[in-house]
Length: 163
Image 1 (cartoon, rainbow, N blue to C red):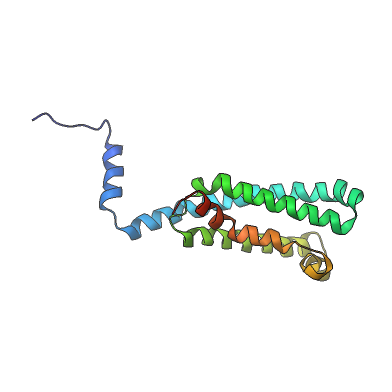
Image 2 (cartoon, rainbow, N blue to C red):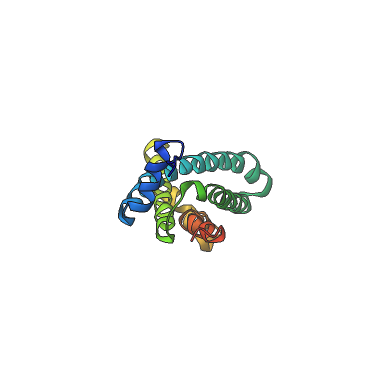
């Protein structure tokens, strides 16, 4: 009988990992790749958020006023977060909805840490000023961005039928 070859040992190694590894091993490998990818995407979101903040301060607030300018900026950033989640979720590759929620939770913690720690200790903003955007009854809708940051990976993963 002729010997069957697959062109490389790499194919056999991948086949062995896929067929013979335990699901715990596969999940550990996936988590090991998923977290650095999620971090990289979050840095991209951070850059977009900073650009959005500059646009808000330079154009939106002077043109529309403080509350409408901030609201429009929040809506724009929410859309950008959703778009980035949509475009990156297959590359981040969460295996389960729980993994996608883990990515969102990581993004949320990093976002809040950056906002408060960098805002206070680097830019020397008082805590009261940093919490102003959380006053929804005063027309501030910043928590919408945080909802998209937390649930964006889960929602886009479901919409893209990953699970």
